[in-house]
Image 1 (cartoon, one colour):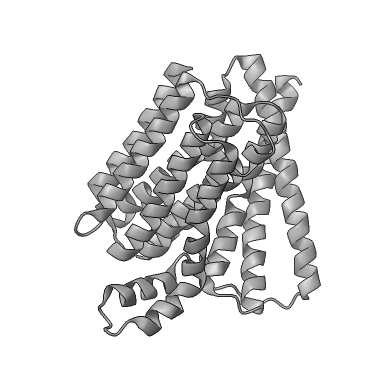
Image 2: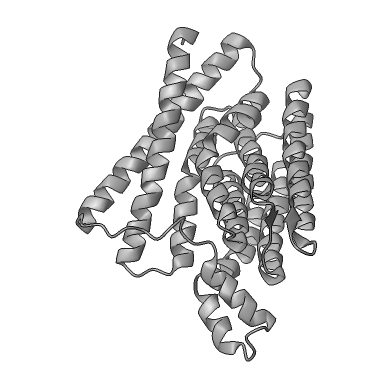
Length: 334
């Protein structure tokens, strides 16, 4: 494919993918409200919809045999999520704060899944072991987020007790971007449109990866740069836009939950689950450095959020700087 064809194909595919992902999330919101689903479950579904571009791009790259691109998309998007969702929100809002109980819950799950996916990519865990351990982490977490808030609220004897504070935060977390507007469309119509949105996300992601691989070959761009620096951040734009609005609204628990949920979904659905069906190629030295940098950014984010008063503007700027340093390192190392 010539660059004259690949460049417009990439741009059109990007617009189609991001637009379809946003419509997908909105329609899931409407269906969730219509069927009376808990806000937390709606939030998880919309987070999955927002992650559609990242996951589908990574999976398509894996199917094409471009493993460095596929893994790079997920590593790049996860680093970008931390910087653009939490770091940028701290810069714009002045501070990101949330209850310690929620941070402990989100941080533990996000860190464990990151470690498990990293161990899998490094060959330290088999696919079956990584999938089993991830399930042990995620199943109780999902149960607690979806129904645990009401249970904790009943068990909490004091309104300021840790259980009560966690319950209130779980009612907020992760939450839709805003209450879904009532829709007069029939349910089957919304379901049909969701299928169309999903098809467009997959088709757009295929177009992005195909054109990006072609451009990379013509312009001698490495797979790591394509995945980490280009596709990863671009496919994460919907998450970043949602997170900044949550940060400016002072919804720290929802913001942090959305960011870590997004990263967890990326690694679970884009690395751990596919490893059961596709043999992952051993990561390169540059890939190992990228994994280490993502882990360092995750630990820095958790440490900054755990400080009294939460993550301040300076720590947010440092987190954004860490992301740009990782991008520069990828460019230099490639």
